[in-house]
Length: 367
Image (cartoon, rainbow, N blue to C red; front, side):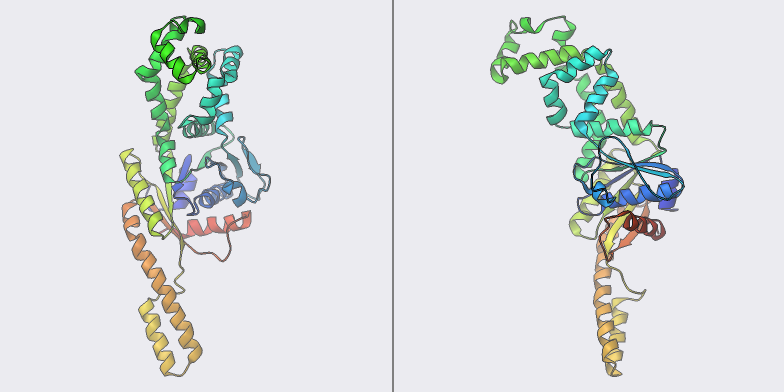
């Protein structure tokens, strides 16, 4: 994307993925981008895959958000919707979609092994987030999906989840687990096989029986999961999908943002935008050294109030200059991306009015 800024991004993108460390304003940035896009006439859904309530809080929704998009009332040419991922419910929906019959779907959903997989398996949250993103992208109600991801390392798990799933479905371990189902073996006959009898002694015969029953029920629909995983991976790498990295001037968030930009490059993805949030305002265009000189001149002229005021301005600008120096390597790492510098605000962003103000600043601040 050229340096025409975030206005172009919200006008042209189909998906915007907001990434960054915890506590840098990533959720409010996602909400502000969504609101600005709606104000400019687009039909937008903002989805958070972070289990925290930050998006609902930012939108001022005391009763929270669920797994289905909820329309937010606002005066705009477009529409704004919001939701919070429920990974277990999404997993259930995917099973129903890919099953060959309602009976097969119910057999899987009732299986104790599946219930543990859906709620506890490592990576299931991230893969279901990718599944939900795919579904929203194909939902005719929306022409833009804005994603609020968990902190950076977890966001990378989200981006890699589809490939991991497709690799697992092609792995020899999975094919071995599916062999009893494809061979027509029943659970009662499994115990006759020495290796499975050994596994049963370790994890329990009931758990083993549930697992085998799950794979027997799952047989035949894994191709749908594999095809969808490939499609989702293509969507995440599509030029319709843009990535916005959010940071603050703290050294840890700067390093995390640089790490994330580098990791995106390993996935052949470029960051389209960088938001540096909560910077110290400079209060004018001069330098800290110039303010100190003016303060000294005011003291020599006997103007004590101007002396104190200018001395304070000098200290504030000194902080601003130090922050700009700290973020310079990050700005350099995001070469080619639109850059927005946002400054400390008098109040927290916790309602639609504040989000709207942040969105206006975000588009105006791009340079």
